[in-house]
Length: 397
Ligand SMILES: [Zn+2]
Image (tube, rainbow, N blue to C red):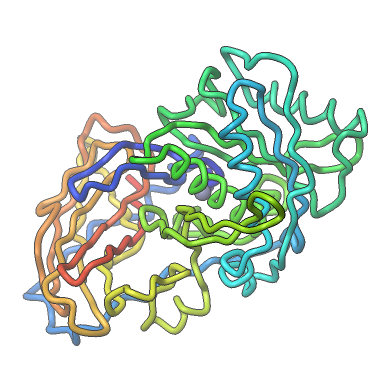
């Protein structure tokens, strides 16, 4: 079973008022081996849990161990949005040298990087921009000597709002906000990322751009060749380092070069990144950095992480899962909701307000017309103490 994990998807807003969601995506070959799944029948009432109890948090693993240790980023833009391009250049220059970057990626071996150059193309943006067009542009720039290649090279394409971006059958801003992938030029393998301007973040559309750039950059750094040399990701869900913290961006203050050789302070919205160290420890927020004003760490677990729903001869299937809110301090009741990413499942209940230590049984039914497949599930939580939590699981059916 294999999940496609290099695309950021956008599926709109939900009740908690979070505007922009990105998610992993599943390949068509994911729904295999359903025969091994089975209904789970739970007898009796759930046992009481300590408020801090939760199932083991997901971990990232790597088989190849490949990373981009000191990224040399090249940013390619079209000529019709020079102000955004300049802000993106400034942002990436800051990000790759920042404590944000080294603090959240250092445990995977990633160190500081640099923005090598901004390349502004002279041609007008195409109406349709496919991944193969991106790859051939990239090949031309490498073969023409404009982009020197080594293992640290990563090429970012920030596409024009005038272009409809397509990747593996999906459309940019409809199904995804960006992706990272790899290609071969000559004898070299080259990692690249595509950032789509979807302008969904309010009040500043650059928030969506900086969040997507930081997301794709962090994931390229820790999983640069997802096709040929798979590296850091969660094997159960296919999610990468930023996917596991999606919906939880943070705003950071950055000091960047300003006028007259001075500096200026700006704020950037960026993705948070998943820490295996914190996840193993289990009692601190694994999504880094954590805001200094954040409440005690809390979350709402889906147990099990992956729900395997067996289908009967009528293609019906049912599973009883458990929702387990937890907190490492006083946060009050936690409001939670289960989000499915492609639909066709029903959850009873699909939301609630519960105290840490409660266990809620959830009956999951699959629509008989839903083909065998898999999708990501997110349990989002929030408490009056502030902040929010995301638990990323999956269902196979
Ligand atoms: Zn991602």
